[in-house]
Structure formats: C-alpha cells, structure tokens
Image (cartoon, rainbow, N blue to C red; front, side, top):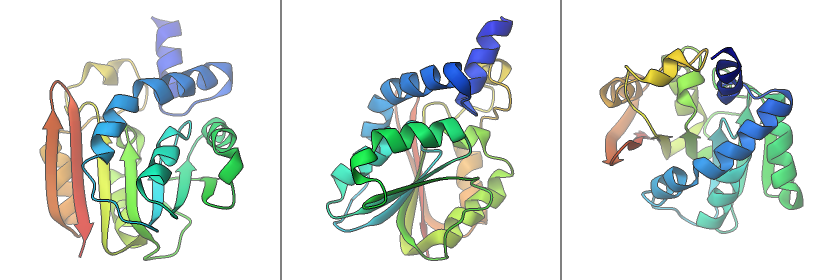
Amino acid sequence: MGILKNFFTNCAHPKGKMGRIMLSMMNFSHAPLTNWGLNLINFKEGWTMLDIGCGGGATIKRLLKHSKNSKVYGIDISQESVAKSKKNCIDLLDKQVFISQGSAEMLPYESGKFDLVTAVETIYFWPNLPGCFKEVYRVLKPGGRFAVIVEDANKDSVWTNIVEGMTTYSTEQILTMLRDAGFSQTESKNKKPMYNFITGVKA
C-alpha cells in the first residue's frame, strides 16, 4: 500500500521517474474527460488562454486546436510537469505557448489577461481554494470564463485516502466558492458516471 500511495501522490506533485510515468498516464487517461469538457465551451478565434495545473501539456495542445491564432499559457507547481509540457509543445514554445512553474494561489500574470482559464483534474490539490478562485477571477478579462473540469466532484471520495494532499469537493461547494470569488453565470453540467464541468464568468 505504501508503494501505491507514493506513486499516486505524484498526481499532486509529479517528481522523478514515477512522476514522469504518472504524467504520461494522466495525458492518456484524462483525454475523454478533457475532450468532453472543452466541447462545452463556445470558443472564439484568437483567444488568450491559461491552463492551470498543465501537467503533461495535453490540454494546452487541445486548447490551441479549439481556438485558431490563439495563445496558451500553462502553469504547474511541479518542475517535472513544466518540463514535460514544454517538451510536448516544443514547436510552439515561446511563440504561441508559454509555460512556467508556479502556484494557482499567486498567478504571475497581469490582471485581465485571459479569455479563458481551465483547470482539469487539478483543483483537488490547490491550497486555499477560495483564494485561488479569486486569483483566477483577477487574471480573467471581463466576460472571460473559468472552466473547472473534474472527474469526481464528491467530498467523500475514496481517493483522498490514497493520494496525499488531495481534497475533493461537491459540485455545490465549488459553485458556492466561484460565486463568493465574484463569478456570475455559474453552472454545472455532468455526464455519468463521474464527469463534471463547472463554470463561471467574470462580470
């Protein structure tokens, strides 16, 4: 159990060889959820977008396909994730894709920069989630959208006993925190068995 727990802890902060394996697994296993969630967004050409917790960079590449002539920024707390994302996006790096290491709690971007911010399977690991949501609100343009895409929105998830540092939230908890951060037009959509898309717009 100890080895298994150590491996799955790399979901939160991938490190070393096990972290690289986990990133490859997440790029593959999160694909159906991510594709479903992104298809619910009404993309426009030329957007500037941010993927928080960019992991292995798969969502960044999908965002580029949804919005032509766009720019996508990625940020992750893990140095291993940043390296993997940069490798996956090497041809567009520092042209259309910009990746850096950092925390959702203190985003290194100016206010009102992004048309869309995405968070795929990552808010479980954000410290001070209400504060992080306020940071997302800050960096969005007026009318910009924040999309939380999660596979399990259940505060009693069994995964919290396996993955160290993981906290799960119900859909209503997430919606409440979004509203408290200032977001309007908050809504959720789900697809059985566990796909959840939770979104809000900056007024």
